[in-house]
Every structure is written in C-alpha cells, then in structure tokens.
Amino acid sequence: MPPAPRKPVGWSEGPSFPRFIQAGLAARLLSINPPRSILLRARHVVPVASPVLPDGALRIAGNRLRWVGPWPDAQPGADEEVIDLGDAILLPGLVNAHCHLDYTDLLGQLAPPRTFPDWIKSILAAKSSWTEADFVRSWLHGARQLLDHGTTTVANIEAQPHALALLRESTPLRIHSFLELTGVRLRREPASILDEAEALLDSLPPHPGGVGISPHAPYSTVPELLRLSAEHARRRGWRLTTHLAESREEFDMFMYRRGPMYEWLRHQRPDDDCGQGSPIQHAARHGLLGPDFLAVHVNYLWDDDARLLAHHGTSVVHCPRSHAYFRHQRFPGQCLAAAGVNLCLGTDSLASTRLGIGTRPELSLFAEMAELAARDDTVDPAELVRRATLNGAIALGLDHELGTLQPGLLADLCAIPGRVGDADVHDAIVHHRGPVTTTWIGGAPAAHAPGSAITPQHA
Ligand SMILES: [Zn+2]
Image 1 (cartoon, rainbow, N blue to C red):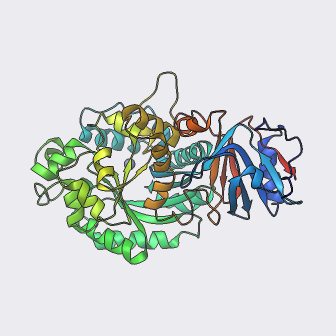
Image 2: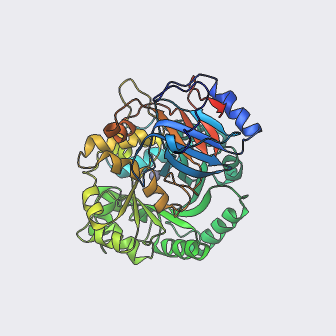
Image 3: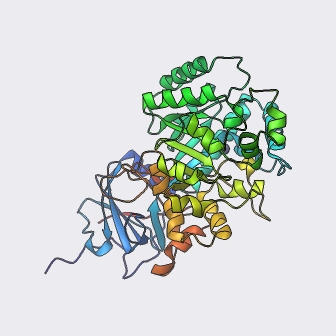
C-alpha cells in the first residue's frame, strides 16, 4: 500500500482557506531565496489541454512546471515549499494576442465614432497632444494592469521605439513587441523603413519575450511595405501582425473602391490597390498570410475569406470589447471556427473600450471573455478559456513553451478565487471580475491582488 501523501502544516481535509501571510512578502522571500521546488495546490487546476483537476496541484522547479496532477498524488518532498491557494482556480497565464499598452491612459477620452476614419482622426489628434513621457507612463500603467489581471504574455503593438528597451526591462511580462510600421505617402522607401525597423529590433537587449513586425493596416500602408514586412519577418523568424478587415469602411475601400475611408485616403495614398477584392484577399496577394501571421479583428469577410485564412494557417485575434465599442457587425467567429481558423483573444487598447456603468475598464482578458460570452452564446466557456490561453500561444508560435499547464512548460500561471462545483469551473473563469489572486511568470510571483495571500510552508 503506498504511503499516504504528506500534508502541509495546517491542512484540513478538503480545500481550505489558507493561513494568511502577506503575498508581497512571500513573493520577496521566494525571489530572494528560491526553493528547489514549489508545490501549488488549488481547489481546481485547469491545465486547458487536459481535463480539469479537482483538488489539483502542480510542481514548479526553477522556471518550469515539473508535474501536474491530483493533490493526493503530489507527495511533497521534505524540503519542498507547499503553497495552498485554497478555494481557488489555478490556470495558465493568459495570452493577450493584441494590445497597445501606450494608449492605456486614453481610456474614456474618445467617444465611439460615427465612421472609422473619424476614429483615426480623433486618436491622431489625442496622440498629438501627448509627450513621450505621457506614452511611457501610459505603457507602464497598461503593463501593470495586465499582470494584475492574469496576463503573462502579450503581443504588444509598439509605437514608442525610443523607450522600448527600457520599457521591456521594466516588467516581468513576456512582451512580444511588434514594431508598428505605416507608410502611405511614399516619402520614404519601404525598403528603408524595413531596414530601420530591423536594426531597431536587433538593438534590443535579450528579453523573455520576442519581437515582430506590424504593418499597421492595409489602408495605412502600400503593398510594397506589406510584401517587404512579410519577407523580412520570415527571413528573421519573427511573427507578423496587422489590423485587417476591421471596419466596413476598410472593406468598402478595398472591395468596391468607395466609401468614407476611400474618399478620405484617395489623395493621400496610391489607390490602384483598391477595388481589387476584400482586405483578406489584399493581405493574401501581398504575402502576409501564413501560420506566422496574426490577423487582428477580421470583422468583415467576403465569401471565401475564412477558407483562405484557414488554408494559410493564419490566426485571427478577436478583441470583443473593442468590437462592441465600434458597434461592428456580428463577429464571424462561427464561420472562422468552422473553416478551422485558430481564434484567440486580445484587449486592443483602452482608447477603444466602452465605459461600463460604475466600473472602470482595465486591460483584462477576463473582461474580453465575458464580453464575447454575452454576445455569442454558441461559444462554450471551455473554448473561451482556450482562446485566452493555448490559442494565443499557438498564434505566437509559443505553444511548446506556454499556454497550458504541462510538465516541461514554463511556469506561467494565474489564480482566481473560486469555490464552485467541478462543472462550473470554466464559467467561473469567464465571469471572473477584478484582479487575480496571483500571477506567476517563469516560476516566480509577478503580481498579487492587494490583501490576497499565499501560504508557503515546508512540507
Ligand atoms: Zn489594435
């Protein structure tokens, strides 16, 4: 008969409330003197790629997960730290597949626009009154919010290259920095724009995240810039991302050579690429589509577009609260999913997030899951959690490292309070509000909710 598993001090039968010590102190103790191995226990562990574990546990050694399973099988070692999260749901750190951290402090400053070109004009005007210090401060506020809401990896659109190295070093987040490129007036050759971007990304110090290129959108670029962006990114093994088929106005510009965006831009950029097909076809024609490409928004599709995206293995990033802010037509998620497209979630920026009544929106993928659940009841809560974790990791080419809780992967995770039945775990995640209890990145605590607590104890 195998020996009974050893229990941490203070353990009572069944999931329990932990004995409280200040989480910040625990974080400091663990980072100053990291134990060889840590066991985390929670009422529910959600590995994502395998079934939910009631009364589950996981073992962290260094920066990686070494074991995930039922608590009774954990068998803590003599010198192992045991942290009992009690009535909590432990899940992988969330992967935010599209964000603009530097617009965080624009929350509530821009009313939903009448047309999409009106929006572009209003955000350009708002940005023109900001200093570099304003953007840096806003970026840092956004990074803090992501950590407090369980995000551990983010694909961020970077428009402040001067401060990028310092900003990336300022946070434990895995920042995947996509340098934003625009160019419509041909004042600069696309080749020189790309050479400069590549030199800047090469100059960044090593970082646990990655880098990539983001030609902004079809309407704010010329085809040569799209083509060269894809060429450079693929030569370097970098990811690519673009806002694509976001608005009705963009669709009409490329499909029909008409509408307010076409009329606004026809004298600012060459228009011989308009009236040639849908924005998705435009992206395909100029070499963007591929498994290394994250197409952001994709709200307006032509007949064969979903199949085209799936054929190229392109991931689509849906940003539900931004979608609601702009009052777009219904997101074609069912059509894309049926075609086999990998769907993931992003927050976009707080500049384009609806203000709730009595609440102050923050950069939270939990809020994005809840928004999508409210708008599309055909998406299973477990699928929503998958889109906020594993699917984002797939889009970034990181699913061999993160996005699920499996032995060998990086120990990126978060926990939320949850005293729910086994069948309600995913629903509780989707409808979680506010900060998480704790966020861990690479085996180290990175954020804790004020007043929350964890109990590291020797087994
Ligand atoms: Zn965006």
